[in-house]
Image 1 (cartoon, rainbow, N blue to C red):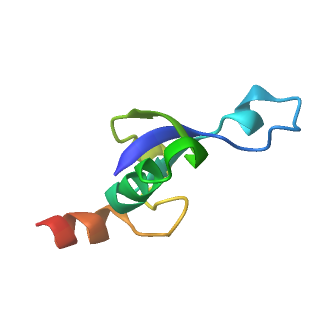
Image 2 (image 1 turned 45 degrees about the horizontal axis):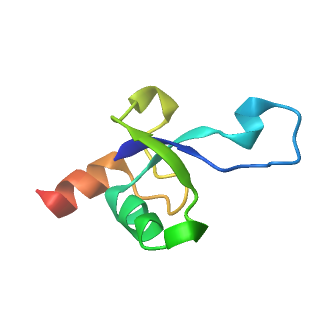
Length: 70
């Protein structure tokens, strides 16, 4: 699980809406990297559980991911 800044609602006046910070599972991060110029992730950081324990895109939880990688 990684905390990532992603492209969001670019028509919004709020930078938080344009570039939200969300948690994404490792699979979604890897899938996004394969998109080349069409990627959605702007930057990746460590995992921040304060943002929730599920992937924003697919719903995989941190526990599910740990069990799959365990």
